Length: 254
Image 1 (tube, rainbow, N blue to C red):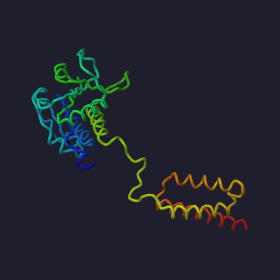
Image 2 (cartoon, rainbow, N blue to C red; image 1 turned 90 degrees about the vertical axis):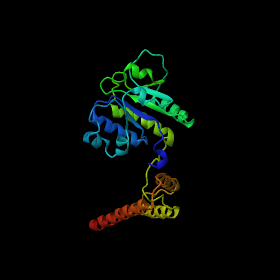
Image 3 (cartoon, rainbow, N blue to C red; image 1 turned 180 degrees about the vertical axis):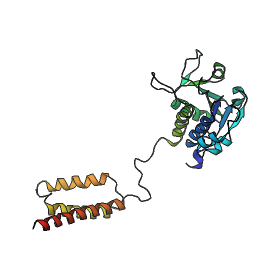
Image 4 (cartoon, one colour; image 1 turned 135 degrees about the vertical axis):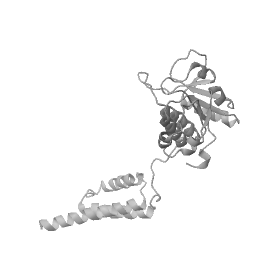
């Protein structure tokens, strides 16, 4: 993850978390998506223990840099926009965003130089109504209505992921090729020549009228694979071994 994709995102605010390992896994989820501003409201004594560090799995900079506050109001005091996560109807008049909609709004807010954050409630009970009241917008993850239970780290990851994807455009290469790029046309054409000679030899391309179309189809099939030079060499080896086996088999029959 490049440096310009980390930091500067929304604050992730854990309100009265109950288990130290959940704080650690939330930190891990945050750093996976380039977020580092963790805030914790009224954690239990000893929250920063070995279990939290182990659960963070290397996201120590987030965990050790977390800021602790006594109240939710103090944790959001420097923010301009706040979302709160909840799956229940709180009977308050507030707009509701999905994580993707919230991420887009956060990007817009922060582009204007404003700060924002997301509140996550205790694992067992969720946020209290007084916590929800300080938020501008409710954030709800659309899930199976018959079972929509997320643990703390899962909820943090869903929101953080949507934030991150808004920054990278959500696009990745269709296939990784390692350090080696696509094979040159020279290598590809040499392989086609090798393959087609052997297909002629074994009789696969024996029908003259169909041969041109069959050759083009075979070439197009391999070209769609966007083969590397090493893969071309492997294919040469496969064809060679198949021919060798055929000749040995013919010799045994003779």
